[in-house]
Amino acid sequence: METTSGHPAFRVFRFSLLNPTSFTSFTWIPDGALVVNSEGSIAYSGCWADLPREYHAVPVEEYENCVALPGFIDLHVHLPQFHARGKFGKDLLSWLHHVIFPIEATFADPGVARRVARSFFASLAAHGTTTAMVLASVHEEATEIAFEEARRSRLRVILGKINMDMDCPENLRESTTESLAATERLIKNWHGATDKLRYAVTPRYALSCSEDLLRGCADLAGRYGTYIQTHINENLEEIKKVRERFHTSYAELYHRTGLLGKSTVLAHNVHPEEAEIDLLKRTDTAVAHCPDANLFLGSGKFNIEKHLDRGIRFGLGTDVGAGTSLSMLRTMRAMAYVQGRSLHPAGPLYTATRGGAVALGLEKTIGSLNPGACADFVVLDFATMEGDLRGLSADDAAAAIVYKADPHAVLKVYAGGEHVYSRDDQRRAGDQRIIDE
Ligand SMILES: [Zn+2]
Image 1 (cartoon, protein in one colour):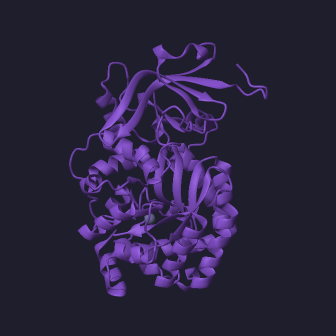
Image 2 (cartoon, protein in one colour):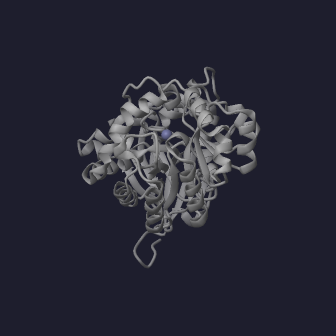
Image 3 (tube, protein in one colour):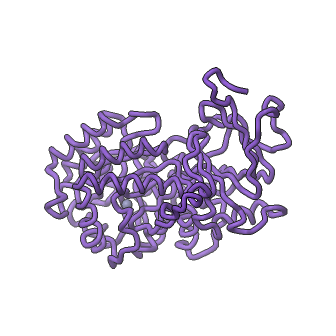
């Protein structure tokens, strides 16, 4: 079965399938089949025994004792902080000023920007992440380079240059006008440059932006139809300073400057007031929950029920470099641990995949193994977790992934049906660096 161009019309995979369907449910098929068409979309997913006859002649790629999941969606991650992970900084504001700003300043050097961006996207793929919403540094050229490397990686990337016109070191501070002008140039160059690249206007957070800059950011996003990403309600001291400066709540500030809406993703929201939750609901604004970062900086505990009960869309973010790893497997575990109680594995699995897709308004395209979706999937080697899959219940298999899998469980990663990472190729090449970094 070949197309006229010589590419196979279909590829057939055989492994167990885990397809998250809601915060409390998922489909589990112990002996499953996945068929990918030449456009890189899923043509069939279901039981091996029910594989339609038309695919029977296609050679099968068999993965014994392996589970396929939708590719992970990292909803909040800082590219220039890739090498800042695990650096001690006491709390959010002290860490930001003493650890992060000096590291981000090194991105004025295009060589640094290129080197880090290349290993960052390779590492995302190695961790099974096929879509990421990424914050770059304040530098226009470094952001151009980040987009080039994102395109090269073949991952789906929503990216933006940070906007920052106050309360930061001189070498990172932009004028309001120049910040917006550079952003507009980047939007024109990259928003929709390929079907996998989108721009996200990225005011860093309330304290590093004047109200004029926040309004200018909202205006650009509205005019060009981009995403918006920023931070909210991460740390109590930060929230106090926002109120002192702007005389209102964090969410109300973003609302009055036009930043809230269905294409906006706000990281953290650990300490929202009731009225702020109402505002996020009313404006259909999404949230990125970043548990590993919240544990690292001692910021607090995200209220899952409050967001679920109000129907606020949320996904999961590593928030590297406050997050200590690009691994969404580790971040799912942190999501349970930050709650201080047992969490059924369906919740983290959904949040790391379909929840992120819903937050981005892309649930028809990514975040599931449903027919018609883009064939973004990660193959996990069960031998590294529970040993043998045979005879395991659906819940035990899911719990092993959330509570026992480490980054070496990621065996293969496909984005749009294209193979973007292979653990064994990496090992054969003697290169452990990407996943260990
Ligand atoms: Zn962040």
